[in-house]
Amino acid sequence: MPPTDAQRQEQFVHPTAQHAKKKGPTPFMIEPIKAFYVFLIANFIAALYAPIQDCDETFNYWEPTHYLSHGYGLQTWEYSPDFSIRSWSYVGLHAIVGNIRRLLPQSTKLSEFFFVRYILAFICSLCQVLLFRVVSFTLNPRIGLLFLIATVVSPGNFHASTAYLPSSFAMYTSLLGTAAFMNWRGGIKTSWGIWWFAVGGILGWPFASALCAPFLLEEGIFAVLALLNDRQRFYEAVMRVSRGVIAALLLLAGDTAINTFFYKKVEVVSWNIVRYNIFSSTGGPNLYGTEPWTFYFRNLAINFNMWFVLALLSLPLFLIQKAFSTKQHGFQSGIRTVVFLSPFYMWLGIFTIQPHKEERFMYPVYPFVALNAAIGFHIILSAFGNSNPKTLVGKIPARLKLLTVAGVLLLSLSIGAARILGVYLAYSAPLKLYKPLGTGVFGQQGRGGRGDHVCFGKEWYRFPSSYFLPRDMHAKFIRSEFRGLLPGEFSEARTGFGFWSGTWLPTKGMNDLNEEDMSKYVEIGQCSFLVDTQYPESHYPLPPNEPDYIADKENWDIVKCEPFLDAGNTHLLARVLWIPDWSFVPEKFRRKWGRHCLLQKKG
Image (cartoon, rainbow, N blue to C red; front, side, top):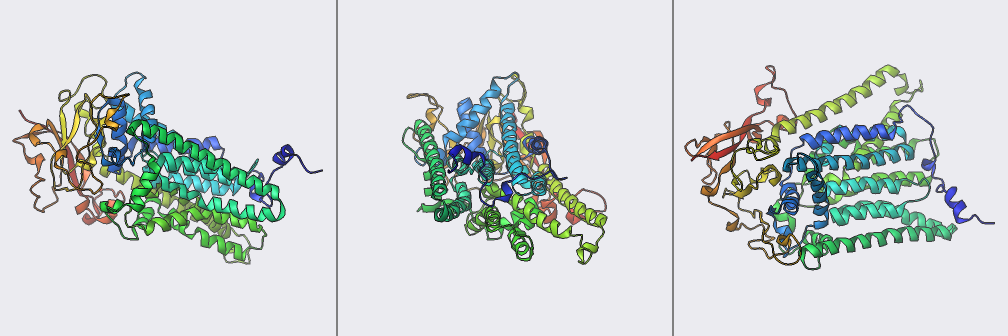
């Protein structure tokens, strides 16, 4: 008599799936709750101290969120109803979180900003520990431990874990989707895997959904093999995929409904993003700069140091191990490991050949960098730990091996910490500059009056968002040497049905060609405050539209200045890492500093 569905579910372990069977305790096994605390500490540090790396985070996400919560903010062309390539669903979720903080005592706009970051840190940690748990029991507890280490010590995680960007959101869903696809305990969870990658693609960044392709290919291969022996399992595979696709389509319909409410016309934003980036006839993202093919290799080497090298080597190491191993792990186990390793190579290959490159484009694949590196390091440690005295490695004393491994991990930790500290010291000034205005202070304290204009010239892209400007102060732009398109402002008109009419009212001066629009500027006489940066070590003549406002003591008072790295006059090594300013450090390796200042108009 064939087993019933209930019996099949209860006894289910996929054929030859040894990785899905429970493993005994090992010295490397860490309880998930302890791992969660480690992830949470690392991510909370990022929430507190990570500078905003990309002005896209400010203008495309923090500013629209500020508009939803406070009724005004800067608007990029992407939010113009003429283009509609940003999702209000994604922004709205963060606005809800920020408004929860407004219900609590002593609320300020700055407290909202950091509250959103704290929630992002918590969500990221939860996603990370779920994948850590699955990796530990699916592959090996030591791989899980190495995954944890590779994640928390990497500067990449410091940047991405709490960044308010769709690519960071896609990183969260990549963690969840991968955990679902990897976990075969209690049944194959393809539907959940498809769902999480769809969430990342529809609410976040559409291209991130491609990361599930290797897992779906695996599902297809095993479904075809099952068709030859067990048609019931083939039909189950079809149903799993169908349920995931239907759930994704329902989510797409919901996202479309929300964006239709805001844009006041039917908009499938995820399709608009794909159309602009791939099928645009106006130049698409390449208008914003191109980089050589080495860009991501250099960037990932800086953000993951040795872990990136291990990630690159992971597949060759696995194939070598399989070729020389005397153990029989089975065809399916080998295929699964290749599938786990594939997303990293696929993503890196696809984006390396794209002309337009940005660091944030790698965020969705960061979990796979850590996973591949952990697998690669595990394979090396397995070979290095060989105790057979007939081999060369076996003759090395165990204590020396331990010291070597500990030294390598300590070196990685030191390089990662030097990078994180270096980034914070070099670029955190914009997050600390606005306190004299009353930023973060409950009440009406601070310099300036309600509605004053805080202006930005050449430093426009360092503006951390309107959450740092209290008492309805508005950010404005004065003309510099930049000749691209600057953000405008959401209309503050109250008209038509519902709220937030600035999301659907027609805009002026917006274009997708990155062409300058003169209406985005104000005269400097309208500025109550001005933000500028001065580089004393720079001896090049200043361009006509970027004078040294800090030196203009006749018209401006210095309110506050913070150190800011003079990257143009600092050695590459000192730009990449923090190097202490000790007497024995050669002068050429010492950092050169400018100052990032808030100025107030005299009179």
